[in-house]
Amino acid sequence: MRVIHYFSPMSGFAYLGFAELCALASRHGAELDHRPVDIARVFAAVDTIAPARQSPARLAWRRTDMTRWAQRRALPLNPAPRCWPVDASLAACAIIAAQSLKAEAAPFIGALLAAVWAHDENIASDSVIAAHAQACGLHAAKILAGAASPEVRAIYEGNTDAAIAQGVIGSPTMRLGEENFFGQDRLDFLEAELARINPA
Image (cartoon, rainbow, N blue to C red; front, side):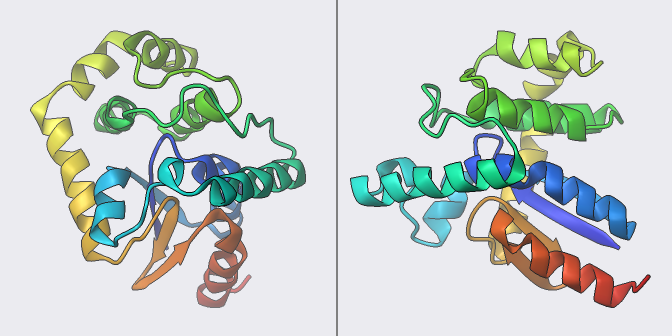
């Protein structure tokens, strides 16, 4: 079983759900196919206002909801990080570069998500990307070089095109077969479907 995970590296809800997504995939023997996307293009395709540009009331609710989920999942969280939103294309392409080097990308993805939401770091910075790549056992220079390559950029754009074509409306969206599961608060539905397909 393969679950496609469409997400943005600056997504707060992707951060809150990432460890649980990895855990449930492991529990059910499912392969996770992590695909970073240009979330601004996804939002534009479905007429969604980016969270940072929504009304003060909606933004306040988002922060309250994130805080509750962080407490439930025992995750550190700054619900109003200094470096959000930022251009996440460097981080997205760095993740794809790691995948292209056949590296295990999940720890790197988790580190970049936490960089924004737990450590108030700017993932649009080469030095931040390099530091987390190195901490995850990756070759930082190769990651940065790969992230700047046209081949990796093409994969990033292709991920986004595929997400839009498959009806993705935000981050994170998990796709299993022909079904989408949008939001880290829908992981229980994904797990139920994995259990139905492959009962223990």
